Length: 222
Image 1: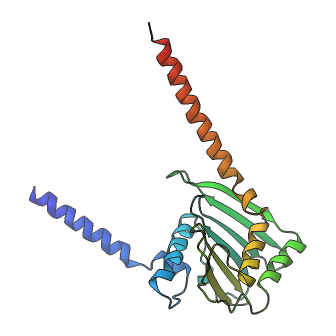
Image 2: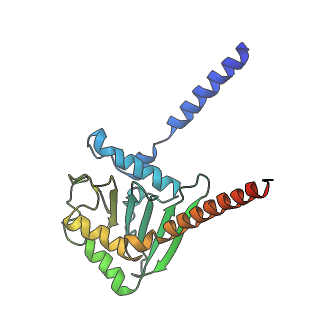
Image 3: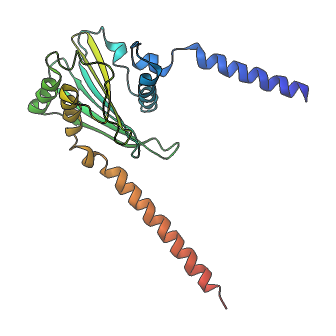
């Protein structure tokens, strides 16, 4: 029994060392912002979501001159997390990719869509981040906590990277940027329609299983 106990201890220690050997998700996806641990909670949560969605780190691409990307990571209270990433090619064309995480463990993504943007929509995205208002916005902002939802918005352009985190959607340039990215896929209601369609389908299946079981039990009565 002792050797089993020692083996368990060694495995526990080894796992702990291996887990700390590399940088954390947060250090990979976001810079050290010098804010309080309370403020970094949502950045840590967002980094974990981006890792599970297998998203690239825009922060790590900061010094690539050709890279131009904008991303919204939405952390709702009730719906599953999502991210929308707009990537510009060197010829000026742009594509947007939507990923919504499944609530079912091991089920992968609930939604994964990629759309090519028209020149007008692409320029609308750029315009939302143009100027100094977004780029000078504080990484964390004070807002009214309505439902616990947080918006993490990142921008990478001309070898410059900036990230902000806001409760709900924030205001000013941050709000405009988040709304622009979400609007590519029709806004909040349209984005989460597949999630609620799936939820309703599951409820109907569960209800049907209950009805089938009730009918089976009734059939067994004398």
